[in-house]
Image (cartoon, rainbow, N blue to C red; front, side, top):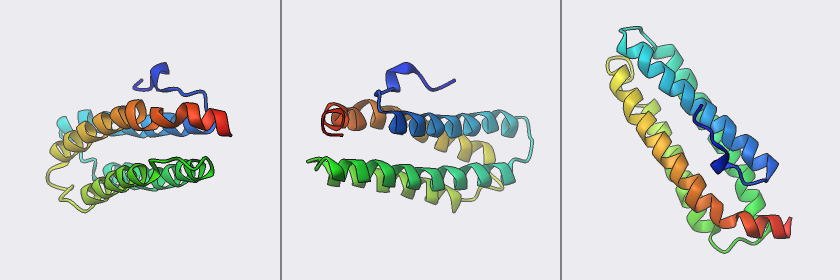
Length: 135
């Protein structure tokens, strides 16, 4: 499992949503194995990427609402990171998934795992004490 307690903030709504994002990344990882074995995963790839895009939009909106409630000083930069993430997932959805499944999966998995780990441990962790104090 990719989720580790070091990603937990003690803010239930955020922690649960982050766990779901990690679960979706795990699905992506599992599809790499299938694609590497020559299994056609086109439909599954599209499904998980659509779900990832939809869920991240939902999560980012929820998180940004909380950040607005606490008047978080760096909210604009935070929103930019969120937008870049959604754009990358959307770009991958629009890429040539059918003929390059394994390569696309490896590329998006690497992006997802690096991005979410960095974002949660750096960008998100910066607001934790302020959010706990003000909410």
